[in-house]
Image (cartoon, one colour):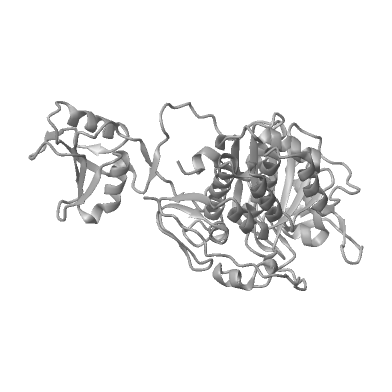
Length: 491
């Protein structure tokens, strides 16, 4: 059965005393946590509980003017582009939770999460593009936020634009780099992320491999897990579970966001007025937005998002040309692949999907397994009196990629009550992959059997389920990868 994992009970102090703002420090990306807030707000509106409630939400959001005095902006495209940035707000988390979820260190008033969320003109699709915090950027001429003195244009890391000139300079820099016109701006804190996940009753994620990161305290076995807010934060922050570092973490964050959105839209929890009130309270507190992102806009977006399915969302990272682009005075930065990035942002400007077209396939999608089927050798035996059952199983396994002997035989002892997979314990991962292709089969250890697995077909065998190996992220992968929501959620 799937592992049911919840974060420890979270106790909030009766009062919070804001701490003094410490010096700016660069922190790890938290882009998944900030995007969760945006999607939650949209889904709240989708609940259709009423304009008055959303109006109350609108009045509670602090406002900023990121577009003040902006000139020579890119031409508007089709659809809507929202710039989502995040600042560290761990000082709002209780000391107990900071210890429990490894949130030590000093909070900073800085942005290390920058994303573009594009909603199609027909509101049938959402595209989320992550811009790495260390991206090499040419920051436009701007005024010093403290002294007002003019500063010349020059190279910086993208996340430094916020510290140099706040929301205005951040928007100007992103527009200059992408040639996309930003329609709305949303600035959030990841604190509300934990609360939102808890109010939704947790979010389910699936992993084919154990995930353990001593830095964040994440410790998940392979399987399905229902994560509460604290553990979800550990999941989206972890970067030491594989060799892919930030790129691997981004993929896990994308999967979590797709699952969170699926949970919010399919569970019906937001149709409960009491739950709606609780989620609203969870989202508030650390959100700042431009004045144009108000009640009417939220309602329009929410109503359109009612028809969203997991496949309606697509996630990617801007194409990267060089992960360690050295710049004098800055050190190592992330250099975009200019040609591919230009193609990506042109697709957004033209309101086109970025995920490749996939043929519609009948039946359930393939189940992810640890070992590729073509690396698993199988001998099929017919454990029933039904002629041809062994050949039918052999053909089905071969069709999904297993290396069957193509010579099914009759079992020595038959009939058997149900399908059995016999395996040498040294090849247990291969056995689990084979069992995943044969729902209901029994795994039975057979020490000394060797690398060839034996499956005895029982009367319960109906068909072979498709399986595929989960591909690990490639640290230096330059090709753009796109993940759609239906590829990410647990099924």
